[in-house]
Image 1: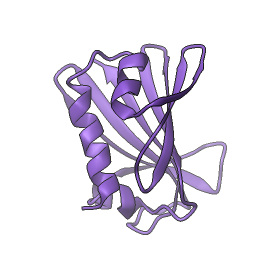
Image 2: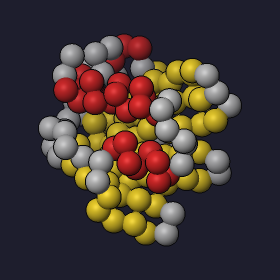
Image 3: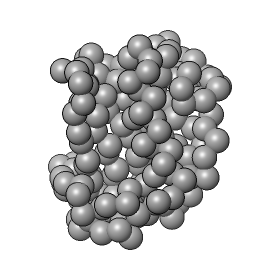
Length: 136
């Protein structure tokens, strides 16, 4: 298991320890580098991610990660790419989304990776990584 896989799992574990607000989630991710209205950007000390932007919209919290590498692969963020479901992006014919979601307690957490192409493999190139947190 890579450090980035462990990092994403640690985020999920730490979410149960904080109040689910943009400010508190930002604190568990890293030091704040920018605040723009209700959106906070934090620095991340991780080999694959350099920062994350956290914001809330329609009672959902979004964490958008900025990657360090243009060659990030799905296997870099998960040890089981086959367990992720596939969804086409309607307005973009070159990309699709790989989604892995689970619920615990009163939360549903989805990992969403925007990937090149239309087939999910461990070597799929990842263009964007985000976490969506919904209260049930």
